[in-house]
Image (tube, rainbow, N blue to C red; front, side, top):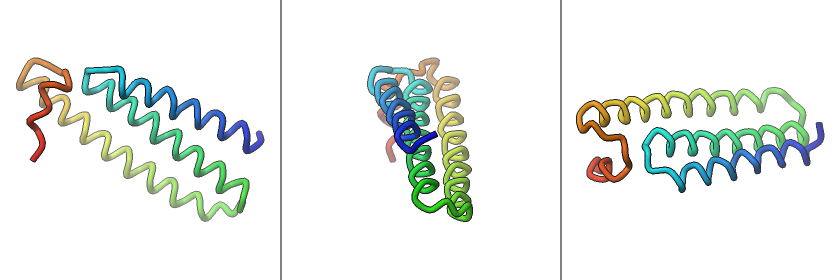
Length: 100
């Protein structure tokens, strides 16, 4: 694999995630689009890091970021599930008053 293919796949993930986040109204689908965009960003950073300095110690930082992102998305899905249970709706319009 070359750096060009890694960046191409990362750009494709970011593009699909952006389309998914902007075109959906369901909270879970918007979060899945955001997850795809973050995964594309992590892939791009990891690919550039590997091709510029192939020292595996830098990859540990990306694993920590991936673990933090996983916990953050799990909490987001918990909020979306609770929102669905309380309001019987999972659209983003009903989640507008959650800011606080």
